[in-house]
Length: 353
View 1 (cartoon, helix red, strand yellow):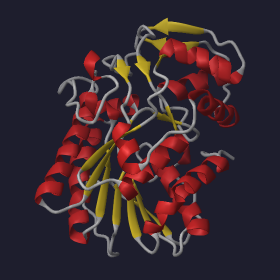
View 2 (tube, rainbow, N blue to C red; view 1 turned 30 degrees about the vertical axis):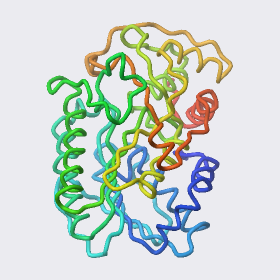
View 3 (cartoon, rainbow, N blue to C red; view 1 turned 180 degrees about the vertical axis):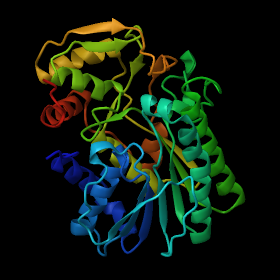
View 4 (tube, rainbow, N blue to C red; view 1 turned 90 degrees about the horizontal axis):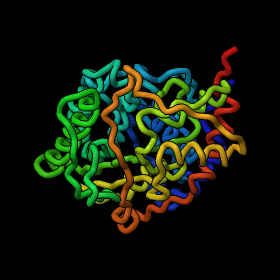
């Protein structure tokens, strides 16, 4: 049976946030996108917190429409304090319980998936965010919006590492615009509700999170590579292979997300990621070879028709603000994260005969 996480990773996250997590004790939290890659980790961490860390358990209400949940979308939740509701956040919802925190993690983040669902991708970030902000307003709940590093677009040379003050270099038209512009508008809604509607909002901008639990058909670079390695195929490197990224392992990612939720200042926006090392896709292939102790062949090809070619040339965060304000410090080096990820994919990804 597939398992989307490593137990040791959940232990690590809950240990790192346990001192601040008692703010969740006896509180009710609403999580959207709870069956997505990040949402499932948040659910698992709450299960762990309820079992071992909190003075009184938190109640978690999980929403997801299951549009991209994949094979892991219907696993059972063995915690009486966690309730799942199949619901599309684009539509309004009435929740009877008093809500203390809203974590708006719903979104379609894989480029191929948002090519398949462009209107839904846009509406989740706009109509869905507005619905959740209205719910936060009615409940006087603290609201956290999961935005994206994609809102920066293709940063200019002088804006790398990219700080939260950078306004972005993005296109309103094109295959990525439904995701980028949706997230940008979602941030604008947070600004409006923070400054005019008395809703306490925080914004997370994730930078290239990866780890166990990514779907084999996610189509982003690391699960793509893992699937090809599992099936002994040469890796397909899109474009030139010179585009660079930094990668943040899931324990550092989820720890950072919880630190924003718990410690972020009202109206605050925070980059969450690992700024080192910034590597090209070709360099990433070499690091994967080192981590699994195996030489990996690769071919450089044009972007396929179902994957948008207008990707940023570089993406690297400045995390100075998160370090100073919410105690965020990533701990897992890239090689270690790759070892954990590829040991998991070797066990859980499919070998096609």
